[in-house]
Length: 211
Image (cartoon, rainbow, N blue to C red; front, side, top):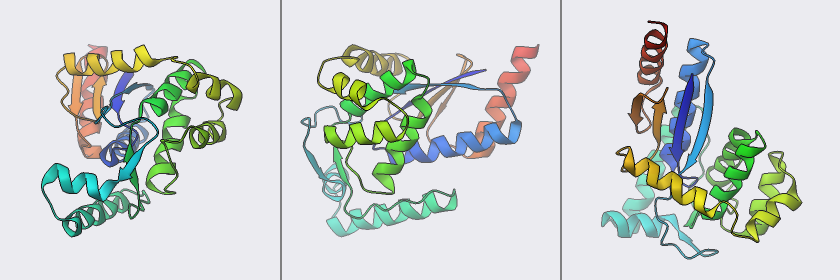
């Protein structure tokens, strides 16, 4: 069974959704091929720059900075309930295209899942930058990619078109946000649903394939 996942590397719901999906896969014992796709929540961010997430949330939702802090605290609690450790105080937001380009490189090397997980943990748990190229190269190498190859990608325009195509494909499928899952190219799941919902969809796909 193939599952396509669209996500952004700085989306807290995407990391949570990935964990819940993986719980469902483990419970079913299903043989699943995961294909990661890029989706930028805000491609307008200048590359290499970043802003505190609390400021971005405050402006986006019309909240005070204190209310934005409370939103992040609630997100930390949700993540903890699913076994994820979020430390969102002081986390920054920025343009994620370079990180997505490295995920595309990782797809070709059979390391996409490891790289995506490493980027998530770096951003949400360790508060390491996904917007500085030196930091991205270090993280990619920690996940198993060749550091020189990763740097060469970032210093070129490699995979720019693929990142853009992923976003266009998601929008064509009706996705307005992420995470967005497509199971067996037939069943769509939007958002970080519960493991039970993912289990139901995966079971349905398995039964449909067997019929």
